[in-house]
Every structure is written in C-alpha cells, then in structure tokens.
Image 1 (cartoon, helix red, strand yellow):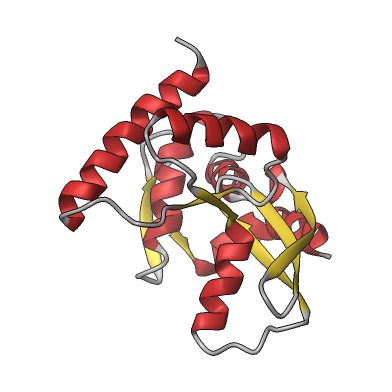
Image 2: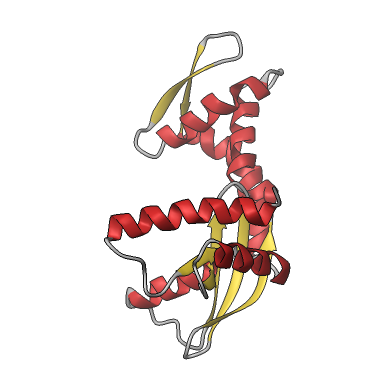
Length: 186
C-alpha cells in the first residue's frame, strides 16, 4: 500500500470519529502541518485528504495556527514579524510576518539537537555518564516530565540504584540542548 493510501485510511477513521463526536461532519476542515513542510509533503497530504473524503481541506502551517491563536487571544501581531518556536521531538523556529489579513512564513529552521529527543538523550547521559545511557532513555523521559509538577524525581540508575534528579540537574543536562535551540531561533 502506498503511503498516501495509508494516510488516507487513517484520515478516514479520524474524520468518521470526529463526525460521530460532533454529531455531523465539519463544514470547514483545517489541518495543521509542520511549518517546515514544503510543497511536496503538502501536496501528498492534500491528495490523502481528498481520497479520505475530506474534499478541499485547508492546510495551515503550525506556526501560522499559533499566530491565529495568539491573535484570537488579543495579542497585537498585525504587520509585525515574530518567531514561533516548536519544541517537540526536534526543535523548529519559524519567523512569521503579520500581513493584516493573516500571516506569512518567512523562514523556518530545524534543529534536531535542540528538541525533546536530544533532551531525553542528554538526561540519560547525565544519569549514566560511564555508559548505559541507552537503557535509561525511558526513565530519563519520565524524570524530565515529572519535574513539571515536582522539584525532584527518583530515577533508576544504570546499576539499579536510585538517583535523585531535580531541576538543577536538569538545567545542567539540558545546557547543550538549550544552546542548540537558542542558536536555531537566533
């Protein structure tokens, strides 16, 4: 099965579930894409959406969706340039320009070494500097996420011992990842 057909099959399921939850199909369908997607990826997604029965869905780049969200929340963005940062598995910094009637993407820079996957690896390396960091990726991710609601977390070390991991350790482990993200944004 071609990729487009596979994506179309997934979209059919998602569209049916959304219509069932809402009680009817949406009159207008907007699909958010990564800001760095070029014409080839966008065209493939449009084809998949059409094959899924979504008709002429509107594709909106994620940074543009953020701009609209900020504008709806009262931010004064019209006719200004600003940067939208997306910290996911990787890191993307996108420069948007307000056009009065919307937003234009002026530039987009990706930095895989500035995102969540790199941060998980850096925390795992911090926890196991002598080796064995690969086995600690999941505990590292869980510890990092635990620090969003608590000051410290207990993490199993490479030898099974418990390691106290807190915000100071996260700052130390994350320094290189943060530097990469900042460099991409600049």
